[in-house]
Length: 249
Image (cartoon, rainbow, N blue to C red; front, top):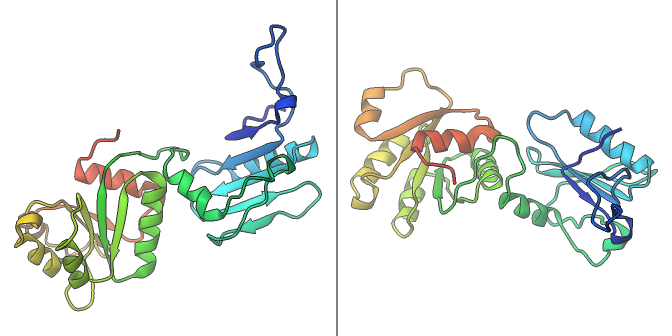
């Protein structure tokens, strides 16, 4: 059976060599540590079967990382899998790596700087502000963007809070909720456009209702586009990139 995991870790003595002493092109033995990172189009069952197959033939430890759930499943031989999802939880490592200390937060911080998820865009140097009164929307958006790009993502929970934050900070784009209590998205945007620094700042509106939106009014306010709630977290970065006309690097 052919197993090609996302990350396969072998102890030095187990790395197969060819007749010249170089590392072999084909490894016919399971890794000591197998790490799989679940991508959107993968079958979780198939990936899990790969991990279990390796454990059956000598692998010490298996990790299944689920970026969407921001959690890890850890598999050890002859044991029930364990779920790790709290940022501060320390993760089990194989016996040959006992000096390595990793928690859930550290793993996803590494993923945020790398492209492991199929279809992900990676763009450097971007700063973006999310203004939305719903904390869960802000958190999901920030986590998905930081996992898929190396943008810096900031949050504000209302129009006034966002405008106050922008008075002292610069960003390259704003995701703005249309329906918020008090100062709604359009009122926030009108205030923003009155500022020299906010006059040409790219803005995407986020809304649960796209019907009845006055597109002509949005055009006069320089809105780059509208995203509908609920959005696909794994497709959010690509949608923002397209609407802002940002090029991937």
